[in-house]
Image 1: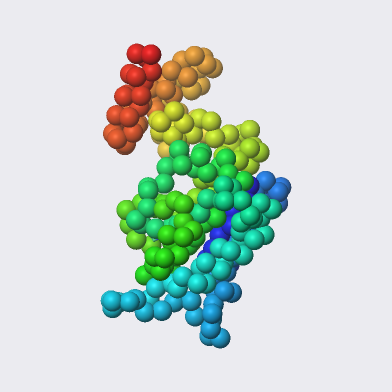
Image 2: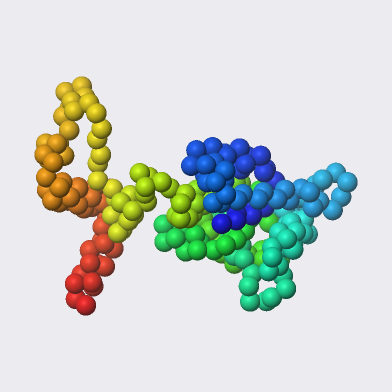
Length: 244
Ligand code: ADE
């Protein structure tokens, strides 16, 4: 899967994603990170890509043209390019005004061959180019960051681990938080007793049915306590399933 990231800070993205599991996935050719520096498409000799906003107000806005040209440079190098109207890659714009990112969205994006991610800076980007190229506005939460790079890295991370082969068997995504809509149960490793706190007996029993039951109950309890919104949804979905 190919991630094309339009940014003013390509090093920030390349440095972070070349570590750990995403780094291994890049080496194994399972994912590719293609950072495109929007500044390379500046239309003046100073390399400026921002300007004052029409109508006044504080702050600078990223101009439409360098963003459009950076987008065009990505489209032009894709094998299917801009030639067919019906096959255009998705363009995600990182913005606090977007749809809150979820595991379901990560799953959907992981089916794409190419994903373009646009990172904004300053006070935002000229609306006209956003209207022209963006297919999905995505937020990573109700707070405002200084730019779209951290959100983009989060999306790449969450989507990459769903690409077949990126996680090993041991790391398998199957039973982690949000599988089935529940949070993960608590886990323990050696020693059996740490500062007087013992591992729950059932986990040492070797009785797989009981362990499975305990873990399920813990997941339910944890979700109910920590994420009542997810718990409600889980109960609703299960009720509907049992009625079918
Ligand atoms: N850019 C700045 N803040 C953001 C957020 N919360 N989500 C996505 N992109 C952003």
